[in-house]
Length: 110
Length: 233
Image (tube, rainbow over all chains, first blue to last red; front, side):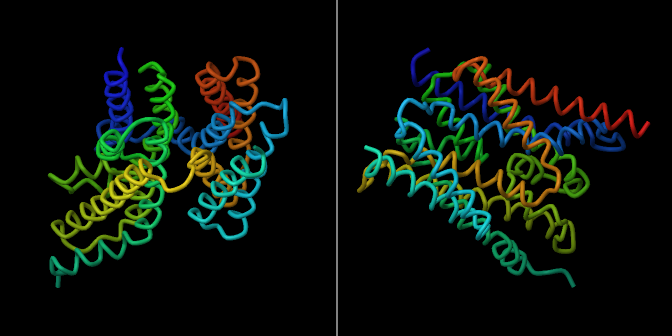
């Protein structure tokens, strides 16, 4: 697959699966049928676990050979946590952490 | 007396305001990230029009650049967006009478739109309720697309070195994680996610760990369901 075809297929797949997930409850559980308890249970628990997994996914490439490989990520993640616990402002946490990370890798750990 | 059309429009706009800033900024982050990954404004806009799912689009930018297989993308979407199933379940009753607006409302049921409409506090009258839900969803998507366009355009002519901008994705997930942690007393699922993913990363390596991690997470969470079911009979 060339790059353009790959991008079209991939975006179509992501869009289709997302729409399917959003539409499925309306297709299956309309009327009297109730969602099974197991589905409701997974729905409550999965979001917490998947976000944890996505954080690991984001930092999967870091190495530990030199301080520059992992210290900027560690500091920036810590900054996001501290900022968010402190102000609970999503935008502040994201922008603050990202700016710190960019400064660290561009100016400090070069 | 039912609200006039103008009042419904105003109510919907005011309701959607908190999402405006968030979506414009996060949308910009996505546009910049896509540009950084080598995908221009058209690709970013296509994603925001047809996918319209915040964190999943950040992941999509990464999957595009990594040339992952469509199956990988499907499984990833399934796991990342599984929560939408449950938004749907809780909106079945509220969206029952939405008529021709319903398909778009279902398509546009993002985390943020859900958070605005799940209270069921709609204007009286079927027509007004439809218009209100339709507008809140549409306004949200407009903010998201606006941010995307800005980000994609800025990303191409960024006046500063954008190296490291991809950390915004990590920051987004860490923020969501902390928010969930603070708003819940039960942290087993969150720790299961991090622990299982870290374990699979070590065992399977960085390019193959996601699917095993998703399976392990589902398995571990299901075990705790069985435990609960056993105790409760």
